[in-house]
Image 1 (spheres, rainbow, N blue to C red):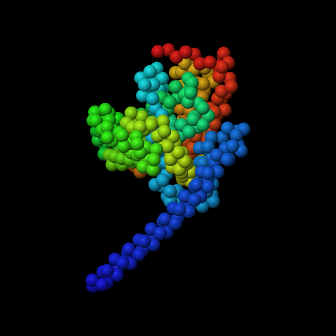
Image 2: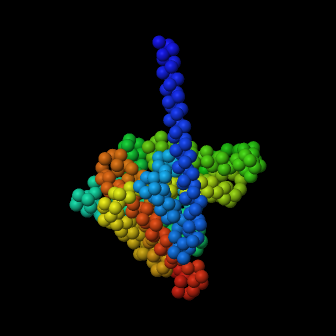
Image 3: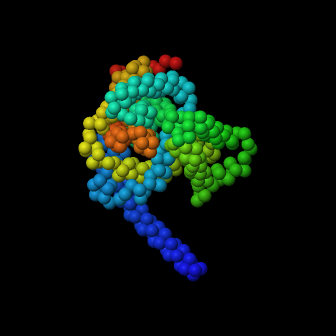
Amino acid sequence: MAWGRRTREHEGRVGRAGRWAVDLEASLQALLVVSIVSAAAPFVCELLARFRVPQVVVLIVGGALIGPEVAALAEPEAIELIANVGLGFLFLLAGYEIDLGHLRERAGGLAAAGWFVSAAVSIVITGLLTAAGLVHAFVPVALALTTTALGTLLPILRDNNMLDGPLGRFVMPAGAVGEFFPIVGIALFLGTRGRLYGLASLAVMSVLALGLAWLPRLVRLDRWKAISREREHETSQTTLRLTVMLLFGLLVFASDFGLDVVLGAFLAGVVLRRWAPGDVEALEDKLDAVGYGLFIPVFFVSTGMGLDLDSIKDAPARLIGFFALLLAVRGLPALLLYRRDLVMRQRIQMMLLTATALPLLVALAAVGLDTGHMLPENATALVGAGVLSVMVFPGLAVALHHPARASAPDDEAPPARA
């Protein structure tokens, strides 16, 4: 009996090892295909330069082409872990760009006001859709229409030098609010353990982030700082490793408390400028290299691979409807709110950029499906509308960006009023 038990245990280990080898081979093959798409994207964008196609669009389209719906060269499940890390890096870098001082200025007040206007409009419109029987998941859809994909927009804005000047000063707070407030809404209204638990989790998460931000000021860690500075540009790469540790730590913490993991990544990015020792600018370059060089492209390609193209083809009206609602609910308020601060062309850019949404739409669709409240066709259409918004809105905003005309009298922004 003992020999038989050992034999079965040995066979079980062999079977698990065989499956692990197969999974590893499939993951490596998927990563190879994804890396080819990622490496080709800059060259494709250069060839299509006259059309101002954002690189994110090429990555998503490339993912759809290699995914199971078209060429079936790779499955999104094979790269799920790396794609999730890419999502974390996307929000970390978005939080890293946030200047907390701007949130206390007029730009921050307008950003908050714009989101609450969008939330009020979203509640009304989603309520009407629910009454008509077109929407079953009221809260996920209502929150989805108020989101802004700052992390997705960031590489586009940086590549096209759109972060400098009046537009950048206003779009960053608007994007931060459009990510952070919906995440708070997810924790409070869609948490599996109740609103009180979600509120407590948010409070603990914020205290943890603030603690990491103020720790170097409260405790004398001179030796620790010295080691970090001495080794940050050597093979030890101390600050980069500490940053990755912080990112993973907050991601795990958020996941364990039932919060969306992007909240942990976003808070990690916000506190990094205060928390990180040593050369902060060099650290930003390293994070760009690691994030945009490897993990973030995998996330965008994986998003394209996961698109249910057949469902979108069968019900395109739903997708177009959600796409139009993103622009109307989240984008249109910018035309009025920023009329004293930006010229019309820049307000149109703000409208397009704030209406761009994707990562949180994926999360909200997943929550709606898990609870059984969201119709599968609505979940697919919502994510598809997010992908379409990334493919259309930023490209139009970039096309309206004319640096050569920045000095023209009629193109100058009105002075911001305190």
